[in-house]
Amino acid sequence: MKQFTKNGLLLFAILSPMMTEAQLKQTEQPLTYPQTNKADIKDDYFGVGVADPYRWLEDDRSNETQAWVKVQNGVTQKYLSQIPFRHQIKTRLTHLMNYEKYSQPFKEGAYTYFYKNSGLQNQSVLYRQKEGGDPEIFLDPNSFS
Image (cartoon, rainbow, N blue to C red):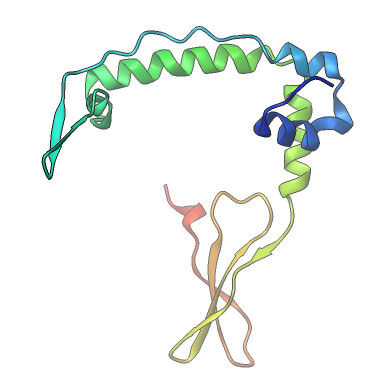
């Protein structure tokens, strides 16, 4: 294999059972990103001028920022949709991440609390349990709208 970056090597280690070197090279095409506007914004920190040309992107509710994000997402989605083994990546990562996870328990008053994720839940569920009792759901963020 040719030279890989650190991220490329990690990706290859995860996916190597399911892809060939030729398939991996297909994802190494250069991307053409849209031009990002720069603003002439400078701050003074203790007499040192610090340029912040992309501060306008911090306003995530502005029309300009939302348009920029939409264009960037278009570039990303176009690239990702061309990966021939994308479904294999999803299947492999799902397999690797699908196991029960528990946090370290902590005590508050008469209850012991802990977080549990059954495998592929978006958020871990907070349980509480009295000594000798059964655990009960205290807070399930997955049920929020």
